[in-house]
Length: 68
Ligand SMILES: [Cu+2]
Image (cartoon, rainbow, N blue to C red):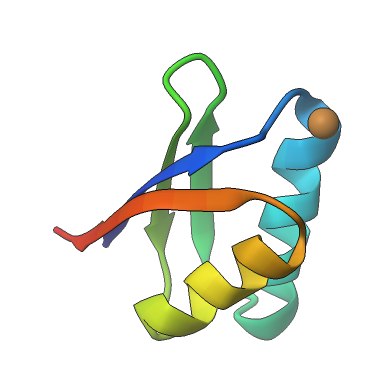
C-alpha cells in the first residue's frame, strides 16, 4: 500500500482524474483520497514511481510518498 501527500487537489473532479489515471493501468487498484488532509492512499500492483509520475502528469504535486 502506498501513502502519498499530494497538493493541488481541489474537488471531486481532481479525485476522479487521479483515480481514473491509476485504474486505467491497474483495474484492480483501490484509491482513497482525502481532500482535507491532501492524503492519497493507494493499493495497486503498479510501482510507486509510476504512480507518482501519473499524478505529476495530471498537474498535481507529490509532496511525499511512502510504501506502508
Ligand atoms: Cu478538482
